[in-house]
Length: 249
Ligand SMILES: NC(=O)c1ccc[n+]([C@@H]2O[C@H](COP(=O)([O-])OP(=O)(O)OC[C@H]3O[C@@H](n4cnc5c(N)ncnc54)[C@H](O)[C@@H]3O)[C@@H](O)[C@H]2O)c1
Image 1 (cartoon, rainbow, N blue to C red):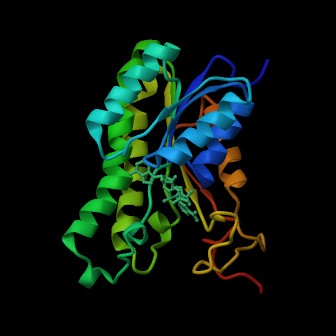
Image 2 (image 1 turned 30 degrees about the vertical axis):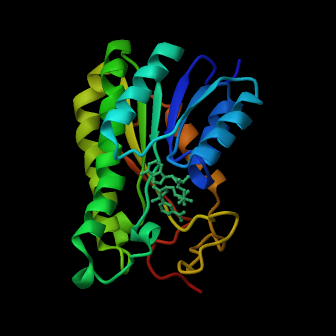
């Protein structure tokens, strides 16, 4: 029997890169997957690939900022699969998505709203959409994808660093509230992870491991956490050592 057979996972931002790798990895371990992404083509492509792996997939084409749509898709998923066991809040990004990276002193209020809404409100929306069902089932794993920006900052991304740090705070407080229902809440904070197969050029410190990260590095950590029931409220930095102090090189 595969590790996640009979489980249903909802992964946001599963249309490409880290989220897609997480979605495919759960499917390879037997889980049915709700593929949430606002990019219809990519969401449907991921869902198609998952169906091809012999499990079921449902494309949930919506923006995680759209609370009504997220709740509707969660309800549809629960109707179809009976429950949602695992939620991975991966959809997110910086003002770079709007091509509006800037020093904080110049950041426009609309950009701040966009970054905070996408990363922290989106995470809260999706979590609330599945939480009642998890509590009823007395089972759940919630894994939030934050960033090392939350713990060491990142130039031109004050809003993003703040929103990602908020995910870590949320992880800890929520873990306290839902532990009694056998629900674990954890956070994974990636360092520089290849996007579309390319190492990110603006994050060139490669850390003690001497290599840039891949979506696989993050997916493996997420699947590990989803298989544990005694780890909760924690933030796992997966960055090849980039946030360590000065090294010997
Ligand atoms: N790549 C990195 O180096 C890195 C480092 C630290 C943290 N992260 C975090 O990991 C997560 C994934 O990063 P990535 O590099 O794979 O991002 P990406 O931009 O390559 O992919 C993000 C996916 O999420 C979707 N998405 C974005 N906003 C959405 C929204 N509001 N609603 C629904 N779907 C949405 C996009 O369509 C896309 O398919 C993000 O939360 C990001 O902040 C990434």
